[in-house]
Length: 112
Image (cartoon, rainbow, N blue to C red; front, side):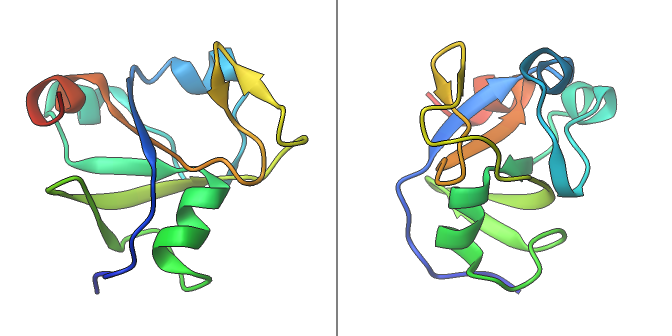
């Protein structure tokens, strides 16, 4: 199933180690892994705010979301954490964070 909802989401291409460095906690699913990176997989991990905006409260993992003009399968959702000022290297990670993490290799190929 896909969603026609629109949201302003910041997309970050990251390596699998990012989750550990940033202390990210998943509410559902998994973070990006080495295979995603190697295969330039069209997968995404959504921040809590992005998930709400794009999918409402329906199950996220396994669903497709369109980011720019690229369809991505949701493999994970971050747990809402801290306050809205919660950041790692300038990336907002709080409960309303409208962020999406894709494999770095995918970002380099699919996004400017």
